[in-house]
Length: 434
Ligand code: SAH
Ligand code: SF4
Ligand code: F3S
Image 1 (cartoon, rainbow, N blue to C red):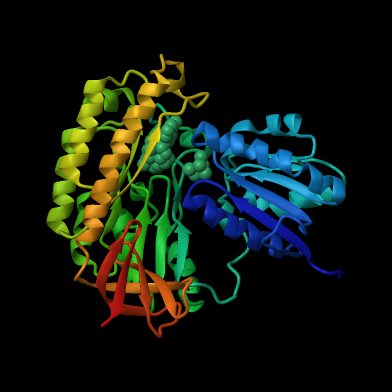
Image 2 (cartoon, rainbow, N blue to C red):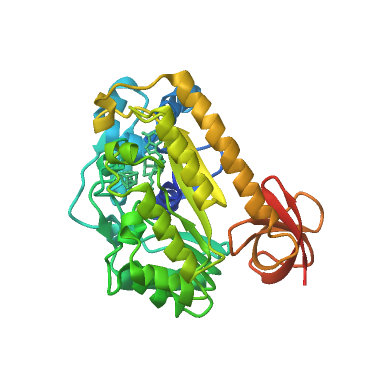
């Protein structure tokens, strides 16, 4: 056998793409590839793409444009497009970009080695099916190499909610849950390799139904694994936050006090037009119940401003909801028209007005985030150290509430330690070992 070929994967979008990229690299490992972290010396480049907003999709085409030179320098280089743009655009990518050799949708990654063979034989390969078989069962087992202390673990994929603005139900397909025993065995394998924290992933992760008791049941099963210290999950939909999951937040010490629970808008009129199937009031009541179970939980969310038909009064309702909830972390976006979604057909609102609203919302969210973070000063927290900092002797880790914490101390990556928070900076905390 010759020298191993080199694979460069560039990942866009959500954590699920990060997880998928890892699994693709492992699958291609079995086909004689090793990972490289630069495109320049690669024999194969895969762009794992995101289609959620217009800008994300455009990035893919400009990145492909930049790769023309690499392909001219190395005619044996194979270029592939994976992920949600691949699913949404499919054959169109092959038409627009003659140098693309393969296009693979998110549910077909297990076919990647076979598709690579096809391109080596001089063809071009396209697979954007939603096959009956579960890709994870056909992907090679996870590697044996030692790894960092945290890992993502996909447990659910796809979405049946059809929010009027969103491409995910089209790019990722219907909701599917992985059987709990397979999730548990993958988690055990990760722990054996050094992982101490897992984040369970799903587009709609709290709709998980791969075993008894839904997501709460899975979390309770995972909590029994010795050596697994922390469990997180993302992303959740308010309508799937059941009593068992709320109770788990109060009862299961390994389940971290952090919850990403997007609401998108604080206006009932807009929520209805978005097809969210909940109200601002029901969301606020839900947050109250969750906080009753776990008072110190940090709430995170997503907002869209400038949705078709949003008025200034609707936007005021969003600002009021934000004030009522007090977010510790939040993502907010200007509405982006996505072809094929119901909202794309509606009259769009003025872009300058949407920009202005986004700035006002982001200023409020920034203040809240900072206030929540500042309140940590003086408190004792648990920190799982993930990497070394820039300054000598400095280590960076995450608190239970997912704040980045900088500590100068003699600790190693993977250590979990008690830290007293001494200072709060715009996006991080500083502390000292206790
Ligand atoms: N499944 C998750 C989120 C998926 S997408 C959920 O339901 O919460 C992540 C975020 O991107 C969404 O929460 C939404 O805030 C944002 N988003 C999705 N489609 C968008 C669009 N067309 N324009 C702007 N933001 C969008
Ligand atoms: Fe998109 Fe709505 Fe599904 Fe989230 S719940 S992935 S926003 S359709
Ligand atoms: Fe983007 Fe697809 Fe994730 S559209 S946000 S990569 S599910």
